[in-house]
Image (cartoon, rainbow, N blue to C red):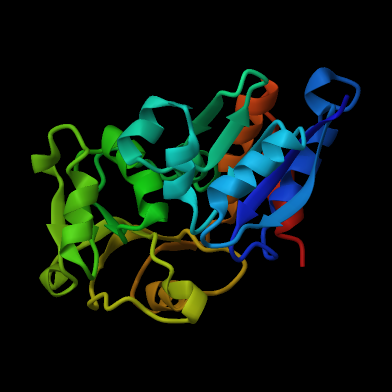
Length: 275
């Protein structure tokens, strides 16, 4: 029987996950890894995520991707979790087992790091990094970034939320938590926008001069030229990227977890970038 998968969120109509996983499965046509269908975008009620997961399990789905705002709730419904998911307490990939177990992983961080290193050819090691935000998106990538480079600064409008996030890190004293006002005079080689500001066309209050020579400005949003990306171009960032590559790379990690094969992401990213 063909295995079924879906993506769950609220809102969800914009998700490209079905297209991405369909392209992945086509790479393994005729093989067990390709015997899957992923076409459903599930709009879960804001107060009904756990019930939606239970319904999907009863309907025979083998797993799902989880997007905003349910990544923290996905952590709660998982009965087993990977180490990164446990540290970040946020899950974006669920795998269902016939015995009732629900396995949770967070592939966001691995997807972000791979996109930056392999697709954008930017070396993270030794760089001064600024991560903007402390919500679910930031939780998913903070620990993997910190594991590679301890020179990580976090900025958030609510400092307490950022401190709560970084408290989970080993040797968290090497991570600084800032208000936006405290960034004045600082410069960073890599600035990552993990806030939802792009959804409302808002610009986080970054000060001018934030980008060091050769800096990469990375917005985890995709599909739009956000105010942050425009600000980065106008303020000296050498490279500006959206999060489409991360989206595909984190999906590839999910595919590997479910199907045991790693798809080629390069042609998928190229296809999604076509006008």
